[in-house]
Image (cartoon, rainbow, N blue to C red):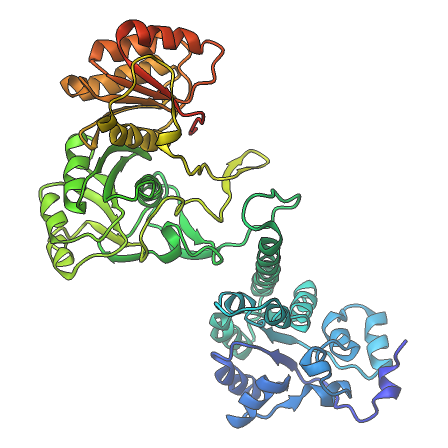
Length: 533
């Protein structure tokens, strides 16, 4: 065992009864002010290379860490704080006589405060030119060890990882009011800090192995950063916040900016995600309106403005107070199309200045920019689909298939007309975003009736037909899962539906096909289902 007392006779030890702080930080914000305050309070400061240099240049007295340990920094800075003189001073228990005697024998002084934050691993791997070697060099070893040691011994050692806490800790030291509650809270922050750091490393390294969500890990490590507090949760008595995945730059939170409007709530963002996910299905200009996490209207057109009109006209009642997302630039014409429409949230990749001026008249409207064009897979690739249940999580790959309508299989003698293919695709791409059992009727580049969230499929069909009314004649109907009985086909026929799009795959497929043949409806199988619970 290394006898640090005999091996390093030239090391510095603190004067008896003095307080000692060890400072080793990457983020230098607030460091000088903290150092000045501690020095004025009579504390001895011990620090590592860059941190010591910053303090010294500001005129703050500081002792280099190698003068305490008796060893210089080694291996290009990889080893500088990993030393028993430091860890003994941090981990020793003041109320244990044996600990006090061992530290006295080895000439180790107490360390009463550790201030540390870590190499910028996440910021490093966020660089477009990052290499594995660069990422590895930005994995901090000594810092997490110091933090964990101090947090473990929090009853005797203050640990500070967040510069925002510097004024709080300094004031408590000046007032002689360092409470057990403060020590405990700082220790909790410290362990959260190192846990998040390790999670970031694990997530990034695992992503290089898994190449996306294809492999489901045996141990799931999640790392998210709080991006904003929300006004409330699903109900006003529920607190809520949004957390961003720092490694996933697509998706709603990846590049979102709020350009105007009231603070966002949990429901606002949940519904906005539903609208973004649906509108990202289309390459043509599209608009999707969502109410209570379910699409209530969708439109496809040659312009964003016309797509907005169609999304509104699909269901003028349900869109009131809803969320609308478009997949292209929102311009003055689109703003004019929605002039009389009351929305809670509007989402677009970008806005023209004229559109923003027009929308500014709706002062309560929350206007969100995603900063990137939303295209197929935008909402899905690179992320797991998670659902919390009692005692754990359910995890699955996102529901994303690069489906081509041309590959769908007609199963009736009557085939759809070529001009109906666009409406068939519209209905099919929207139905995957409606709660199961889901039915969507579409025609003329817009949805006409949407039914979902029912415990039987025929009731969803009745809801969709009732919403579509006379517009259902000649339109197409999509079902998210197979149609097992003739009753849904009969409801569609009575409404005048001309084409049914469904996955197929039921042992009773022939019953549905026979009903379609008998009632003069073309039926197409896609071969894939899209349940959404």
